[in-house]
Image (cartoon, rainbow, N blue to C red; front, side):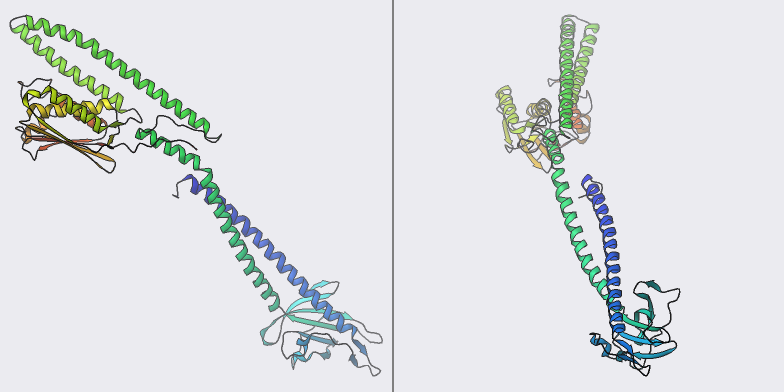
Length: 457
């Protein structure tokens, strides 16, 4: 999933929102749990203090006596963190065994204490560096000259231990919930974006020539897009067909006047007739060139055009063997049956027809054609055993209107037209010496994909 993809944006934004909500909820739950633990701790101190008060009485001699056990064994363990103490004024009347030789700094509630119905609570330092939660209440016993200060303290480490345990469990639970939500988001986004992937596959199939339209049903949100794309494809195809028709009409409209001029020039004599004949021939070559280029531009822009190579080479070989039957040429074709050109059949026929015809014109006895696929490209090689061309001649024959031998029939624009069509398809043409002695023409063109037909689920 790329960072600039729609799926990444959807998942990242939803995951960020989930993280913020879960973090806020976790903080709130941790705060509520901490307050609950603190209140329960204070309630426990209050129960112990009330038990201490209930078991206290003054003897006949005015001495404080405790007649009730508090049920907390840690009051008997030295420096356990749980303590009680009873003061009268500045004098300590009694204290728990857990204080050993220490005393609690019990004072009347000050400005830092929290005063409630059960007494005043505050946090004080205790023995061994403990942080104690202290509950103090002033109680006047019967026959007592002044109130007594009852104090019960407990180690706050228990509160923090409970909070840490809860926070750890809460973090694990929220983390697992977050991962589950992100997994659900990934699954949801993947399922939700499947129609877009089907549209992408359909467009790739149209471009490769294995389909003509977006077929099947799409979700309600994407169905208008599919309909518009199909309408655009139909409109584009109609425009191209109209342009192709105009090009054909123009070709027929020009060929007749040119043929008339050629015949009239052939009947005449003198320098004027020869000049007209040469100019008409030049005009014919230029018209053929530009009409072929216009047709190639029209057909080359068709989305989804696909042409099988092996059947076309077989047809061309059969035709050329009949045309050059008197010379008894050998034309060998090696082409896998699955190879296909991503373009119009007319353009492929124009290119291969020109190249094979040139090879047969100049070949001494044999012509070889090989076609193969390399990745997304096709490579075709056409060789003959004729006289070949020099390096300068190979560059010259690709230029418009350059003919090296006027004795051979033709307009002299075959290779130039081939080069134009190859360029329109983003391909490459190269002329090299052939291994069998003549000229080797190498073509590199875009390849079409397989023959599967796309259907939207």
